[in-house]
Length: 256
Ligand SMILES: Nc1ncnc2c1ncn2[C@@H]1O[C@H](COP(=O)(O)OP(=O)(O)O)[C@@H](O)[C@H]1O
Ligand SMILES: [Mg+2]
Image 1 (cartoon, rainbow, N blue to C red):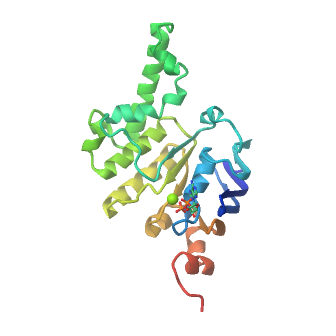
Image 2 (cartoon, rainbow, N blue to C red):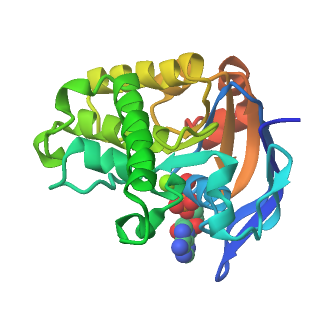
Image 3 (cartoon, rainbow, N blue to C red):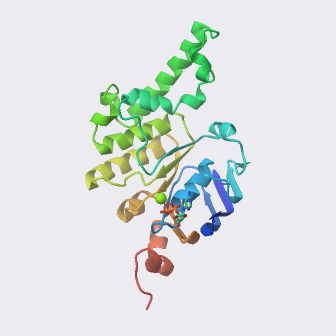
């Protein structure tokens, strides 16, 4: 059994078949990447996994069916994500941005500010959240910028803050939508290193959408290729690169 099992997933947006009968399994411990041309359905697939869209078919996390599951039941499953476009509070500092990712784990939630809660109850959870944040920040090499407003940081560092925010929930599966888009090559290589470290040292399975083929092929254990909402290939980076359908659809090569 894989950590994530996607079976027969289809989704239609008013006539556009964004996903057609997509099947794949992500194994625990791997970095699994999804590639494909713009509009192939990659983000839509991630949105189905994260629960934003409800597709036809089945998506199981550690054997638990997630399609149709209520949003509040999901956090406990151990999935965290980052978004294609940066989604941080630019004026807030790094620590506060990262703590946002911990919110769903705070049992007190909004009630934590309520006078009904004992001082110790709140402080206990707050201390735990701060501890988790510090750990996530350290995992991404952000200790030095904890108190800086996000807006002051270079783009590549902001992306790492997003990753830290996802990590603070202590996920088992991390969903990353084009984490390296808009980065310089050095920033990409640095982030790729962090992703590999999260995967190997922090025991996080990674499902990543990424455009940069060089990065995808060097960091992924396996790769799946989508084209017009359909899976056209899946395998090791080497297998996928040699696939003629992939070369035609994704790399624009003619099959002679
Ligand atoms: N919310 C939406 N409403 C309608 N169509 C959408 C929506 N999201 C995506 N699509 C369409 O679904 C297809 C797949 O889009 P998307 O998943 O964003 O592709 P990718 O991330 O691979 O570039 C595209 O044709 C896109 O226009
Ligand atoms: Mg996308």
